[in-house]
Length: 144
Image 1 (cartoon, rainbow, N blue to C red):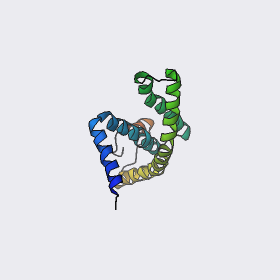
Image 2: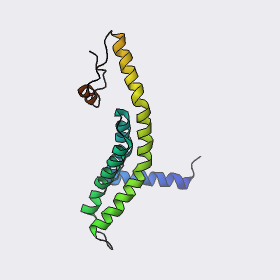
Image 3: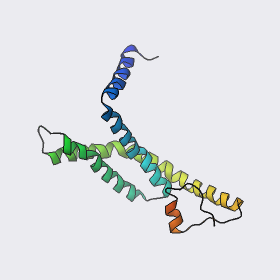
Image 4: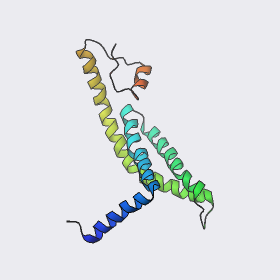
């Protein structure tokens, strides 16, 4: 059972999100950047190095609003941006690695299912570079 104090906290959080939609938007952007896109990267089979490069770029991009909009009291803007970029990288690294691992595990299963679907039609799966690049936006198997 949820204590009245905890219920008040959750209600207050939702009330704050309703009053300031930018909070909800930031949460959506963070979830996409830390979970959805790394899941997709793992699914299409990129390397761990490319994931780390993505995380570094995402951390810098997520910290740009701080550098552009917030006036720090005790630091220069670039110092505030570096601090926020490091915290964004740390906060998004764990969910991104988990999502990437799940995507890496599910990607080969998806390829096997595509091959079985094409085989059921009496065709072979197209494994060209163009067909694989098309798989990032088209989920249907490329049979030939």
